[in-house]
Length: 634
Image 1 (cartoon, rainbow, N blue to C red):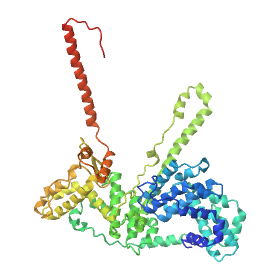
Image 2 (cartoon, helix red, strand yellow):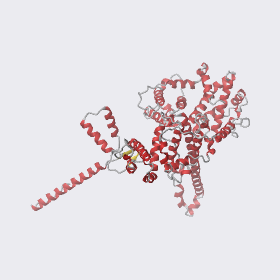
Image 3 (tube, helix red, strand yellow):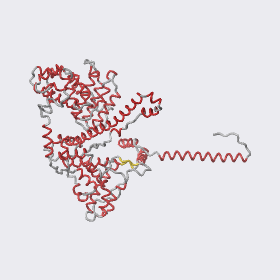
Image 4 (spheres, helix red, strand yellow):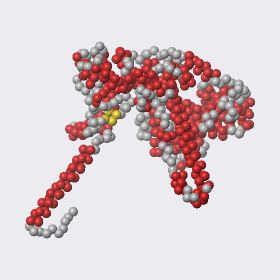
C-alpha cells in the first residue's frame, strides 16, 4: 500500500463536484485556506517566528478568528464543530509547512495571545481551547488529521464504494490504511494524545455491526470487522506478514557498515596533531566508537532510506541511538556532570553531520535529511522520558495506595482505636504528601536544542573544545617546542572566535568580578581562559608575522558603563534612528543597584549626623544661658 494513499484519495475527491457539495469539512478547510489575515498589520503574531510561512499562517489564524461570524454565516449552527475543524485544519497546515519545533512553539504562543485578546462569544468555548490542543510531533499531527478526516468523510467514501466507482480499489486501500492506523493507536492502551480521535472513530463504528458488515463485503479480504478485536494488533494478522518489511530493514541496517567520508573541509584538520588525545578528543572517540551499534537498527529505519545518497548516515544514526539509549555510559566516568555530557554529545553530533552534509547556507533543523537524523534523537528522548515517568509514577502510586489502605483500615476500626488511644496516628494518615516533578521524572534528556548553520555550529564546537581542553593544553604548551608555530596558529584562530562570541555570551555587571554566562553549552566567561594568555606564553608575535595580537580580549564593558555612555550621548548630540534603537535596548538591561542604594544610605546617615550636631550645639547654648528647655520637637 502506498504510504501516500491518503493524499491520493483526497486529490481524487477534490476533483469531484459531489464531494464539495456533501463535504462540509473540506468546504471549511477551503474557506480557512483562503486566509483572511493582512500580513504586517497584526501586533499579536510573535516576531520570534522566523519562518515566513508560519508568519503568514499566524496572520490567517488571526483573520479567521476576527471574521468568524462571516465564515459561519448561513452554515451549521454548531460552533463547537467549526472550532474542531479549525484545529484539524491547523494540524494540516503545520504538517505541510514542516517547520522546526521553535517556530511551532511561537506559533502556538501567538495563537494563545490572539485568543486572549480577541475572545469569542461564550458559545464558542471550544475555540478558546484550541491552544490546549497544541501538538509538536509531526507524526502525531499527521495521524490525528488522517483519523479525523476519514471519519468526517466516511459517508462519501461508502457511497463511492457502493457505486463501484472506478477508484474503488484505491478507496478500499484507504479504508484499510485508516483502520490499521486506528488499531496501532488503540493498541497503546491509554490513548493520550489520540484520545479525541479514538473516541471519534469509536462513535462512528463501534457497535455498528451493519456498517462494518457492509464495509467488509465492499472491501473483501481486508478483515475490516476485526478492527475492534483486542486479541490482535493488526487487521488479518494470520494472513499478512506485517513484520516482514521491518525484518528486511533490520537486516539491511545491520549489514550497513559504511563509514562516512569527511566532506567538511573545516580547516581544523591541520590542528589534529596538537589536539589529538586532549580531553575533548578522548570523549569524542568514545562517542564515535562502533561498539554494539547493530542493536540500535530499529531506531534508524527511516534514516536507512538516505544511505544511498549519503553513505555512512546509517552508521551515524546507530551511534547516536546507542549513545542516547545507554545514557552515554562510556563517558560517564570521564564526564560526571550530565549537562557536560549532553554538551559533548550535541557537539559530537553536529561535527559528524558536518562531515556528511557540509551545507552552510541553512540552519540544520531546516535541512530535511539532517532533521530526519535529529528526529531519531528526539523520539528516543521522548520514549525514555515517558518510560521514566511511568515507572516513577507507578512507584509513587504504590505509596499512595498503601496510605489509602492504611486509612481505610484505621477508619474501619475507628472506635476501637479511639478506646485504645491509637487515634494519635490520624494526623499522619491524613497529612498531605507533595510530589515534586523531580520525583516523577529523574531522567535527564539530551535534545539537540540549538539551531545554527553548520559552520556556526562548528564555531561553537571549536570554542567548546578549547575550554574543555584548556587544562590539558596548558601542559602540552609548556613543552611545545616542535609544534610551536602550529599552536600559535591555533590560538590565534581561537582568539578570533573568542573575540567574536564573547560580547553575546557574557553579560558583566558593575562592581562584580563574575559575568553571567549566556552560552554555557560552549563558552566560559572567566578571564583565565582568554586565548591571549597562551599566545603570550608561546611568544607567538615572534612567529606569526603579520598576525600579531597585542592585547587580551578582556571582559566586555559592564552594562552600567554602557548605559552612562548612552545617557551622555543624548545630551551631546541628536541621536540617529539607529542610536535611538540601541539606546532603547539598553533601557531593558538590568543594572547594578548597589551604588544607588549605598548613596541613599550614606546621605541619610549624614543628615542624622548633622541633626545630632545642631541639637547638641543648641542644647549647650541654652543651658549656658540658664534657659530651661521644656519642649522638644521631633
